[in-house]
Length: 447
Image (tube, rainbow, N blue to C red):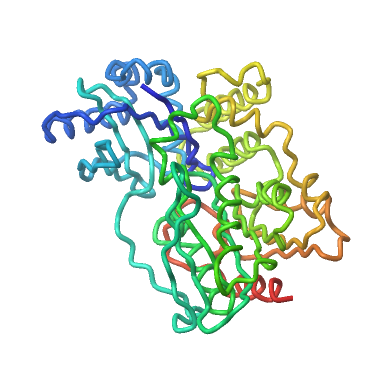
């Protein structure tokens, strides 16, 4: 059995995930498979970690001992509230695999618990995600659909090629163009979370104003199963950077796009990595960074967990215990060395190679060495990447004539407006990226 442990963190750095897949689909009756998957969820909900562990295959037993099962379930409860019930379950083929989706209702939202079972009905994979349900997306009022058209494209070729969408302004030549780079987790091309699609908002908003936009499926979404082969070498190069560079190169060879005016727009993790992307391709025209982190990810995870726990729902003693656990995991990450690269242990559900690669990466320092224009945007109600991170950029780059900064008082991490204290439930309220944000990006690019 191969292993991939990937971070999804609620799509945007919030919950832990373990993703482990067997190499072959099972051949058991569907009712039997679904019953076993429901049993696993029932054991999780009852916090019977030892019983749950007894159903794991050998790989999962190494990766998720009973204590880690409890920690993973705790992180789901922190984000989504008390478990209520199993709503329904079904089996869906994912490439050559059969995955059982158990949709569960929690106090604040629904969650799919994806369970992969081998032919002996042992758990070979466990994955928490947003429900796979059709979403009724309606374009924002600032979108003018008649001004652009969309076409399907492939980013890259061969093993890791990715399906994408290119939004092209109608009747224009030598257009500026933007590549959208996702945040953490196996995001789709629209960065869908609940009923919201921030990347679709941005793509359609920019395309309505004469700017071509390329968005694509993230590699950890489209090729999650194949990535198992990288279990001890997986880094942000595999997750994000290599594909962003291929997307830029694709635009350079696309008709009606100005190859000298190709920009990279990174959100969250994509914003954090944008300077590293530009450092590898000096032909990029500029960077737009939305809520880009400047702290180390392991420190962000502690901050985010502490914030979410402060919203209430569990006792003070439980809060303290969960914070202590996550601080312990952070401390383990801090102590990793290159000698640990081949380790099969996971830290925040990602391999040692992932964290070691990021240890010496300081986004503002890399940005300081770039000469290209940069535009930093930050929502002041964002609890995932906060003004503390924003100040990391301003401290390093303020005074540079080609660097622009702007904050938005009412916006959350999705750059959508709200009121009061920001919370995860806000992401389930239908909305759109604020028009002012789209207008500011358009004006900055054209300037």
